[in-house]
Image (tube, rainbow, N blue to C red):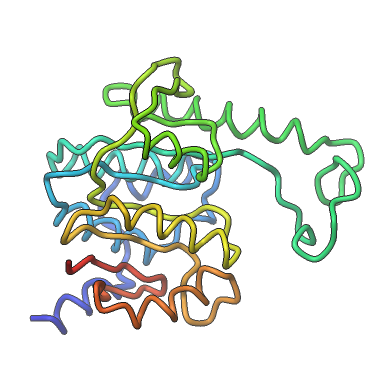
Length: 242
């Protein structure tokens, strides 16, 4: 039974859901939706604990946000989706040296600060179009700030202008924020604090062949007896045992 599940979660068969096939060409960020992640999303949401919200850390242009929301609706899951993103431009060499200017890579006439507005607007447009009947609560925040609000049940206004109190248990989290080792651990620990038993975490860029801090962290999470690996395709989907 377990081997059959692993085979399914490692499937590379063509996607048959027509909306999931189409969403790649509808939303900014097509190259960021790995086929393997789709299978892992499906499994987590199909087996989602009823008690707890769904959290996405890192929303970019709304591709994964709208996919998660679609799968929640398709599987008749009442769990509410919350997401956060700082929409900060990260250059190719930012991690190697201090940022010396305010321009995007290769374009001294395009401001990084304009990227924030561009991506945030793209996210809002895509989400109000594709998820109008069940909008997620999405916040323009770094994940640290988001979880400060979450822990204190503080009110915040989302990008759609709705004010709501954050907080509560988490049943599934997709972690795709800052992939540095320190930040990845912060995001994981924040989620872990509220994750219900049998809840899931999908760690983006955690594959064995990746050099990101999130991949290094995953090697250490494997030693945590509170979690088990549900699938690897090639990123890891883990489930909390206790």
